[in-house]
Length: 112
Length: 113
Image 1 (cartoon, rainbow over the protein chains, first blue to last red):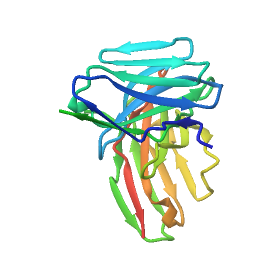
Image 2: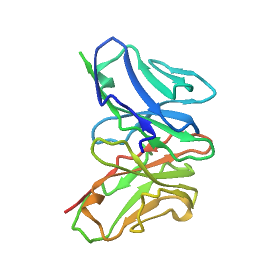
Image 3: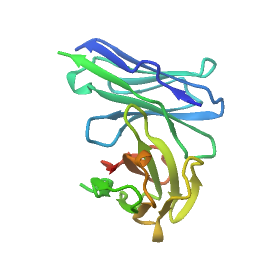
Image 4: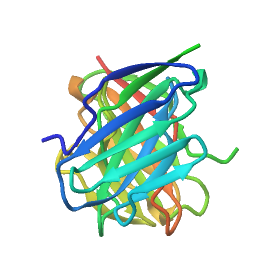
């Protein structure tokens, strides 16, 4: 049972345009969400997080939106840069636990 | 750089052998996690420690897997009687007190032949 789903395995975007990566979850107990970026041969790197008391969190070029009623979150990267090309994972945890469930990832390719 | 380190980076072993991996977290991070990642999948939670206490363990973890974190510093993950299905990248991560963000190490790639 995949509790965190990233239904798009890959995405290509032109440099300078917006990249939108999506994530859906099924467990209504999830209340904290993180996005990670992963380059080949490296461990994931933390990007941005959001708790369920917010619907938006912004950090530079990265913005995460949370729609609790739809159990959906998205990561917006604008403007996209070639260095953003990587695999992006969303992860979720429920209140009272530090156990994180990861999605299967979306490979983003930013074309110069 | 005092990031999370893992040793070894690569391990090839024959089926049935035991293997042990080590993780050194960022200094003063009180939580330490182990994950397994296979091709095309996200990191899969195995277990986590808060200081030296192992607080949660995945039901997916069979009795052949054991993890320790003596004195709340480095951690070891041992796999006994390895099987070909154990071939994966084993990732370690740590978190500072009061924060959810996890800082990952580079991983140990295990190949069971």
